[in-house]
Image (cartoon, rainbow, N blue to C red; front, side):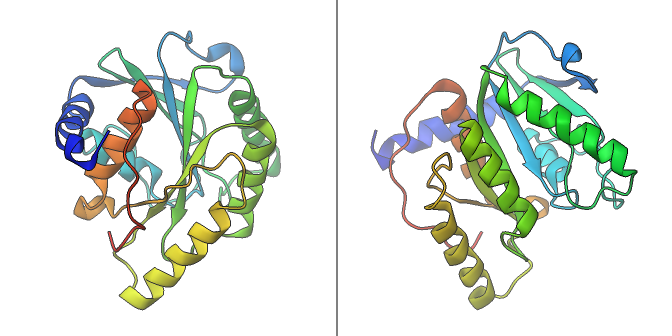
Length: 224
């Protein structure tokens, strides 16, 4: 596939995400997971990284995924059905959850069990706050995904919040670290969901992962 072939694929991806979508269920135990009848794309990240905002932007909805100013509100694995073709999976945030250590331990155990034992999981989109770059907890998740051999891709969020030199430094550092992780996809995605920046590219990337479509190589990312 060449870069010229991207336009129709981008349009297909847009129609896919803007088609019928609904919340399926919130899962608090492995026996609550739905049947593995469709490919799954999971979203992981720190509790304040903007996962719900990004899911809403991707699907063109404002309230599909609940957003909150209180970190740690997503306390279950939330499933969304896209056109009976694929499932988006919003995982509990890590790092800032204002709950008991017991609850955090239970969430962590659930998420790890899901990540390691879900054959229908095509890719984890690992959201990283573009204002801060990779942090210790992010690196722990990356190491865990490497060990579990789960394919994942870094998505920098809130990329409109930094001035260009600072942002470029974060991107450069992230790209270098991604190269050292065996399960990481080499392409880093850049987004600013509230300004609809990077959403088209991310839709296309996810659609390609769902369908097994190989995308052309792209240049190093620039400002979102």
